[in-house]
Length: 238
Image 1 (tube, rainbow, N blue to C red):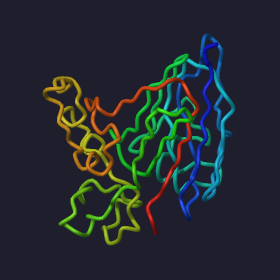
Image 2: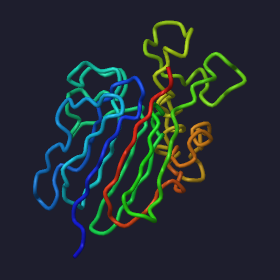
Image 3: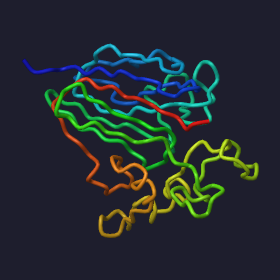
């Protein structure tokens, strides 16, 4: 019998930070409405986890961590979607786990195309499926010109209007597409071509080889038999 459901276990591996996990994806499967598998505003304290109920496939979507939110998961500094539930909504400039699930088959990847905010590890239950690991973003470089993993221009600051003085102000690293928004860096229109689209966020690939870091980075998409998945979030060290 084919497997026709998928379950996600979401873990907060941050030692001192609460996160608000979010899922956004297909709202219907075979004409049936799917509700958000995460309770609206669910907060995960350090080292806590939550497992969704099984939901049907085919389904595709993305998972991320919201950070520095109000208690109900709104007004987040990182990963905000405008509501306590991100079902049917979107966000920008965060580390993403992306998945497409079909009966008996799975496509999955980590994406830094828009930005790099948390570390994520993706652990499929089925043996033989590749575990993906993306470490906590190495933000060193904001005050050290010799370390260019995240150029100072691309630092996502908690308050962009304040001058940069400390790594405590850093929430993430923006991709060149998120920073500049041009066709060249976002690989749109005349630049929507693998021969023209620049691998502009090269420092992302250096820091996180398992991740999809620009639109034509085809090496980062993985396939597997359909299986349940554990997604582990990690945060920068204080």
